[in-house]
Length: 299
Image 1: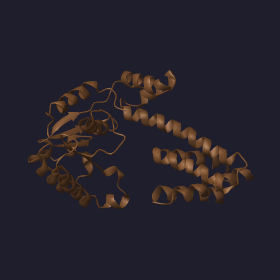
Image 2: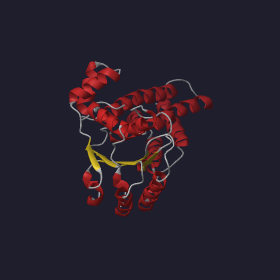
Image 3: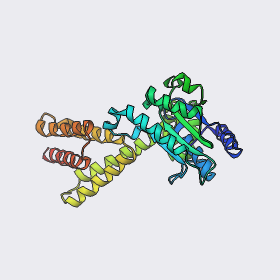
Image 4: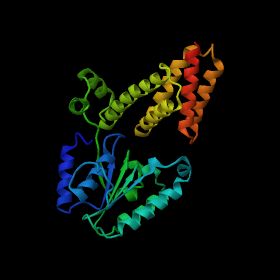
């Protein structure tokens, strides 16, 4: 949810409505300040007149998000950068059907090599008609000067603690004391505040799932599968919550490390595999839960 950038929203609506948008923008600022969400919302406004993230795929927008690449892709990010720019060029040269612009959003320029940025520079220097390129970055220094100079830079500043608190009171559905605590630790970033709330809810849901398996007399395979399904849904929605799961398990078995060293070691090994490899999470989560239950049941 966009919050705290009302003036910027108003200005970009005006530019879009009057077909006055510049052909290339650089949105830069600290992480979790809303740069990427603003770009997505602008693209949705251009196509559907709604300044918010679209719930459906936009026909006239191409999003290049390198953060979703696999580890193998990241090892070969130079060729991916070039391929992404070439795909963007092909996309922009097609005629828009349901929108006045064709939009390309590239998330986090740090993934683009100098070679890829030079390829992008050629597009920015001679942009296709009715095209719009938006690139997000933490710092303008991430760009080659020749490319940065040809884009209009928009700085997304961090917000005051009072604005973050106002947001949390209105939409956070938490106590005022909790809102104050989150606002203080959000460092002026709405995205960080939202992540903290999600992690807090995830932590409670994970604790409940673990407790329901360990404390109750559950042995049926279907019951375990349901619990693992619940956990996987949490991890998919908030990937950071996988670390919360690990911490919960480690804290539960820590008091029994001397009494059950082998089983505790097995749990640590399962966690290490999940952290370092692309693995079938379901199998490892089940192993961790069964081993944890065994340790606590025998103690």
